[in-house]
Image (cartoon, rainbow, N blue to C red):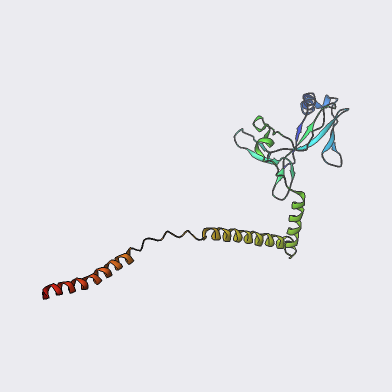
Length: 222
């Protein structure tokens, strides 16, 4: 695999580079060509001829690969453009050369891609970073280190206490609901004792029958 990089230069510089790469390079005065970076690896200087231009190394919001073809049909991959970010990912980067009077980029993360459809790609295709509490992040990191070293979470007891407190609160609320639903209901008004009156009438009728029978007996005797 070849080692490649993307060099974006102003139009005036690109013409001079084209002359260097052409067949007339041997007769050109702009033969010296150099690129060097400072210790931070992000800012540097691009030298062409006797002129120096400031340069910046920017991260692209996309994966960039280069291909080579001999028949305009079959493509052969030649390199991944960028630097290794980790074991399985390669960060695409671009070297931007600017005129001496132009301001430096505000961030090392370039907003756009290399083609027009990738304009504002970082804004349109990347989600915003969540706003996290630094203390919470540090506590989680400590807990992870403790777990990896064979320990336990430092806030496990606090979480258990919070869980128990929440359960007690829910139980109290449930008991309140049960007690409010089991309040004594109003007693219905007493119904008239119809059965007692009926029994009394029957008793009176029974008592009156013997008297009637005595009178009938006296009439029969006469």
